[in-house]
Amino acid sequence: MLRVGLTGGIGSGKSEVSRRLVALGAVLVDADAVAREVVEPGTPGLAAVVEEFGEQVLLPGGGLDRERLGAIVFADDARRERLNAIVHPLVGRRMQELVDDAPADAIVIYDVPLLTENDLAGLYDLVVVVDAPVEEQVRRLTELRGMSEEAARARIAAQATRERRRAIADRVIDNSGTLESLLAQVDDLWADLTRRAA
Image: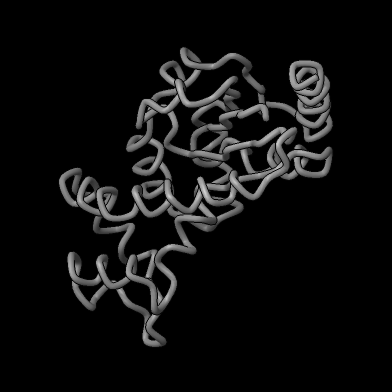
């Protein structure tokens, strides 16, 4: 099994890269998807988040109000650390279950937004960083996700710098150009990964 850590800043295009890798045959373990799963209604994870942050972080239907929780934790490092202390162990356990279910010869792509911030590079055989200029990240977050520029810049500032991410990369995928350019780089990466896995 080849374990590949995939990371990049918010709005870098990491999701597009992971979609392409799955289409090529990779097994995806998506930390964000798992993070949503472990705080679904009825889970111990959601109960712990509500105990820490109060009923204000719930939607009327009982689900987690991610916007409200995000506004709280992205404005306060100490509260963000408390949220991470609840969610990260749950995410880690669930991700391990997914890997245990993958074929022994799989190329497993771990899509981990905070790989750099949490010093996780050593867990993977290879680290791939999807990189885009900050102004391009801001443009994507405001135009495609409807964030305010202020909110977009706050999210970017809360993550590792581009330089810090690039410093841990075995491969950098430059996503400052066209989709075709991005996909060509991913196809080249896949060819490299299949050689390594063999």
